[in-house]
Image 1: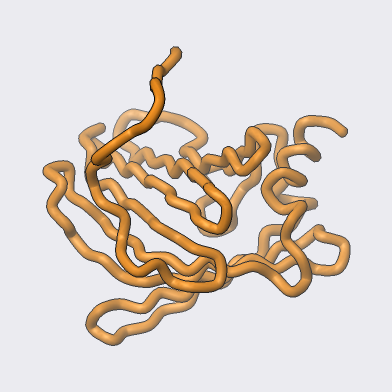
Image 2: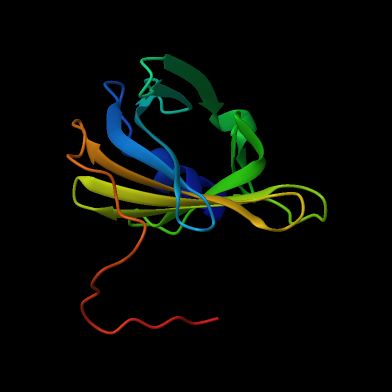
Length: 174
């Protein structure tokens, strides 16, 4: 299996015709860690029979009572590219997987005067937390969104903007 096919399989191979739903609390923070907004959302993914089309539905529920729904169809034939999966709602980004639920969505190109964003997904059993960083055209950090999700039910509380305790030794490598 080539890398392009492996990326599709890593991202969508577990999606069934019944689908899966991630229920989450999305909290957007300013660069100063002040809450801009917080709301509930459900990200649902459903495959067709041969797993060549993934239907992605986001349903947002805002604190003022408004609701919004967005639907995209991710078609393998056109969206599965050598540099990652093109999401129809985010054409300038690519979704990539490194296997074992280590996934990211990142801007394809860093260009002066254009926004730049990335989302990193961290999964543990039926829980998932993702962190979205959005940079303005100026290159300054615009906001950070932390999404705390659970399969099939909403979390009791949103994720915190700060990490309180880490076990073991952590190191970064360039």
